[in-house]
Length: 575
Image (cartoon, rainbow, N blue to C red; front, side, top):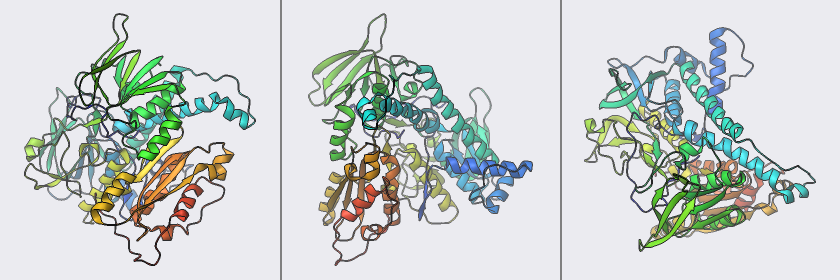
């Protein structure tokens, strides 16, 4: 589940995170892209890599083909490279989330002797408490919605008895998936020769790191370069008492220990919206508490309004906007959870809610305490570690700290798992002497509701602001899923794709999709932005018929580009 970066409560984001010994912390990450080509997620690729390496070591033939595993990688895996003279490692990574994992594997491919330090469990937030288990729950909610939609089933000629579910089995599905992916990540690193060092990592100097478990002596290692990839933890504002039972964060909710009859969700970003999809499918009533004057404040406004019509209004969901949850008290002694709401502007008391449970989905805070940043003269900004466009860490005076980089949620550039992995791969490229600057505007995001929402680049208001500042025109093109044959065959015509572009150059500024499999469709647009592909070129791409991909095909074809003007499109830039 992507991390929400919009806070639904007024209080300033603070790094009030747990101590570094807290097992709830770890890095985030997932996905990646290189300079002129994208490489997503990597989980399947590394799993295949593991099988091929295992077969070579054992002499047994794997039933799975080895795809893309070069002799160079195999050779590097056997010895994990040879470190630069005078150092234990070429690269040490603090945090074994998906970002750290992606960086480690890419480093091995480049022949670097690599170690990764993890104080909790491999996989970080994404695998253990985020993207992966949440998708398991959302898979269940999607099936439940299909089975509960009598009108939809009747239109397809289907008759199904009433749907039901077993809560513990649903919870086990999410937990088992996380365990499987975690095991795959761990084994893939071991197979490629990455040294996994267990303990809490601390930076001692620009090329020195120590690690160890609480109560045991620390071990110090040296490295030519260090990457910090410690991720984030749920942000809980002051005044909210979390007991993990009736008032909880997404970390607790993913365990699905119970399904409350009525749950309040504080925050209507990605996290809150996805959990509303899960809980309402399982029978709960939901109340959103949002600080801003509209739900889903991080989305393109037009997409947000459509999402409210499709995902909120028809379901057992009500909401309060422009309010803060000043105080939330857990259920106790037979009394329900109590939520005191105040007006977001006047701070006057507005209302009091009494519900069975409250999920705090107010975003995430960087996990950077106890890293030893004072040893390299680095001061965090609201908990985030300052970095330049190359992800190199900057000290309190704005100077670059030699040999130290920070990726993922800890630097705050884009709090998405796959962004962390992309940043990690970019850093490894730079370490190896290849200039590589990541264009964050080309990194897609998705919300896995039913139907899904996805986006890449600028929203329409952001694009208009940029156009006024830089002096160029923008246009908007739209297509509907109702005109797509595959969507109609599925009886899933609700949806919209929106393109924001420059008519003078054909540059794609942003694409936003709400509809069936939107999370999969967005990558054609994100690849185009990453590669600097113009609309006048991509509109000639051929799409299989009938497929949902034709939604984007029609979208690009409907754009009106001024063909007589300069065809140049600006090169991808770092953001």
